[in-house]
Length: 318
Image (cartoon, rainbow, N blue to C red; front, side, top):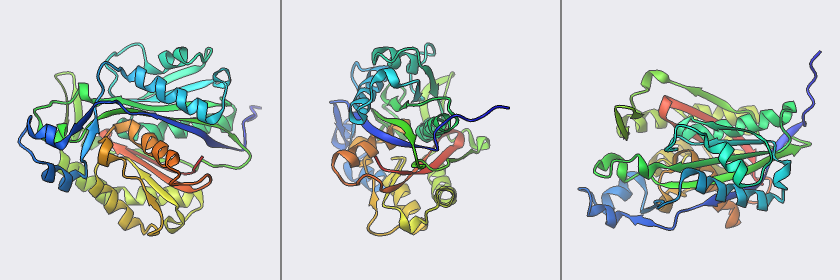
């Protein structure tokens, strides 16, 4: 008989992030495409975004992962699984995760990339939690890292105002009590034309209005289900960290959920832009660094994007 040998639960032990030094403001984009600072702010909430220079996806992931390991106080040798959520790695092979593991002196871990676009981090976090609870891993490094600037058409106003670069990471380890709730995930591949980056058109393309309608009408039930499966009412959440796609989407989902007015709502997008799979861990790292949330705060994660893939879980903040 096969017996589970894992821990009763899993929790986030430490967080880290990497934000490129280059800042591209709305005023900068006014010189490139027909737009304005006011137009961008009103429709997206973004005032500026970070754009990488020579840094690769692996470079940014390594820095964020190193910070998370330091914050958790974990010896890299104790990491036995590395998961990197990304959809923008320039190289088809090798994957980012094995490269990051080697750079961080993590010896011979399981390592793989997870491509669920903007939902990728939540997918990877769910896999990490399950691996620890089943005994497949003891400590897991989970990273979201994107260099979207290299697949953005900088003459396309509908996308160049939104997307940006960066990385965020968490270390996940065993816990006597579950501190990462069950993941609620799904997809609607019938709408696969809404967000694309295809071989015959290497740029990221998006039906912004269609995505907005889908996100604001279909995702609140997903978030509510994640809360229910974790044993929390939305009004009991202390923080909400949604994928940083658009402040209007964030506001709409929070309003429908009935989150407490005292809850902290992540708005990292304002000066970071939409960093796809990196957006949730980057936003979490900023909240932790600024002491805007305390350890144990019940926090909702919800990622959503191309596919149309989505995933959500409630975690207790590190």
